[in-house]
Image (cartoon, rainbow, N blue to C red):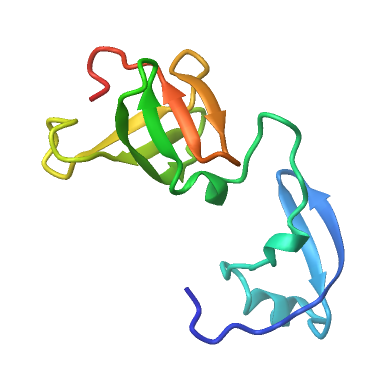
Amino acid sequence: HDTNPQKATITSYRLHKELVVIKLTGIDSIDEAEKLRNLYIKIPLKDVAPLPPGHFYPFQVEGVKVYDTQGTYLGEVIEFIQEAGNDVFLIQAPVGITQEKDNQFLVPAAKEIVHHLDVEAGRMEIKVIPGLL
């Protein structure tokens, strides 16, 4: 996380393969752009583009409360981890829910496991399968 954020204006963008290439005001050469490689861009929440129903941004699920299909509280999402074909929710559970020392477990982001996710209400309902906890 940058401790010295700088405000910038995106003047244009284009898609290139699976990347988005952006043009920032005042950055007029490849050398200047290279200095910004791997930095984060923060966008005010009011300017974030809406997603279609059933989709979410990873930051939106942090803090979502997780329950099983019987309504038992299992913990809350602390991170959404995106990996090639294996997206998972990292859940921080109360003591005694899991057998792990850190009381954390992973939930695959699959329709067979995640029965209901309401980001606005902050609630997820999952089917607990053997070995999940």
